[in-house]
Image (cartoon, rainbow, N blue to C red; front, side, top):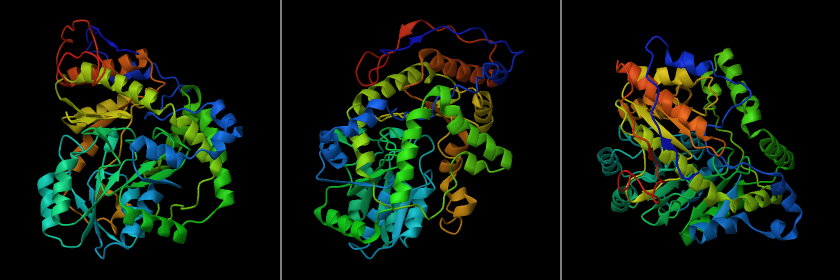
Length: 462
C-alpha cells in the first residue's frame, strides 16, 4: 500500500450518536488484532524439517540485525529483564531501578523478584519520554540508583542522549526496554544497542513472535559473562511447559487472523468483564511467578524463518501509521504520539491522545465492538495498580495518569485494510467534531498520503 487517499468525509448528522453508527456494523467474527504482530504461515512450521533451519540460530539473527556482539533467547521479555537484573547485582551493590510512570506491570514485578527497589519517574504529558528534570533530580538525590529503564514504547525511540548524559554522571546502567520496538532506529543506530543492556519480547502480538519469548542483548563483555552465569544458575528445562508453548504457537498460527481472532482475544475480555475482572480483561493482571525455562530449538527455528519477513512488515506498519498521521494530525483536541526527527519508529500501533477523558471514553465506547483493532496500552499509571501497592510507592505521576486516561491506540496490523483504516479515521473525526459542537466537517482536499521517512509528505518530515 503506497498510501491512503485523504478524502472528503460526509456531513455530520447531530441526531445520530457516533458510537451507534459504528456499533451497527459490528461483526463478532471479524476482529483485527490491536497490535501489528507478524502472522505465521504453514511453511514456517514445515521449514523446521529442513536441516539448515534447525541448525540456524535466532540469536545469530539478532546479533546480525542489531550489529551486537551478544544475544541470548529467553522464555519471555520479562524473564530477559529479570536475568539482566540478576546479572547486574554481580556488577554493583546498588539496589534501586528507575522506571517510567507508564509501563507494563510486569516490569516492577521483575524488579521486586530480583530483590531490588522500584523508583518511579513521571513521563511527559504528551509523549512517552521521561520528564528529564524529574529524572535528573531523582538521580542526583539518590546514590543507590542501579539502573534506568528506558522504554521505547509503541515502537518509538525515547530521547536517549539526555538519559545517557544523566546516567553517565552517576555511573548508572541503562537498560533498554525494546519489547515493542524491534527494528526502531535512533540516530542511525537500532534500539537495543544504545544502552548497556536491552531486552526484546517475542510474545504474541509483539511483532516477531514465537508465542512467548524474549531476547537479551548487551555490548558489555563483563555483562555477557554475568548474563551467561545467571542463566546457568537459574534457568532450567521444563519439557511439559515447552511442549504446551509449541502447541500454543500452533494455535497462534490458526487463530491469528481476523476471522478467528475474536475467539482468542475478544471472548476472554467479555468473560472477564462479565466477572468484574477489568484488569484481567485487559491482560494487565500478573504475578511475580513468571516462568524462566529454556526455549526449544523448534520455536527458535520458527522465529528464525519468520525473521526474514520482519523489515517488510515494519514498512507496512509505517505506511499505515503515516496514513493515520496525515489524516488526524490537524484535528482539534487530538494529539498523536509520533517519532522525533532523529528517530525512526516501528509503530506496532499509533497512540492517539484526547485533550480530555470524556472524549476518550466516547471513543472507547464507539470502538468497543467494532472489531477495528482500537485498544489501549495500559489502563493506568504504574503507581495506580492496587495489586502493586506494596512494590511501587505512591509517587506523584500526573502525566502518566493523564496519558492513561486520555489515550487510545490505532492498530497497524497487516490485516488492517484500507476501508478499515478509513473507518477508524472517520469515527475519530466524528467524535471530535461532535464534542466540539461543530455542525459539519471542514472540506478536505483530496491528496495522496506519503510514507513516513521516505515518499512525499505535505510537510518535510512529519
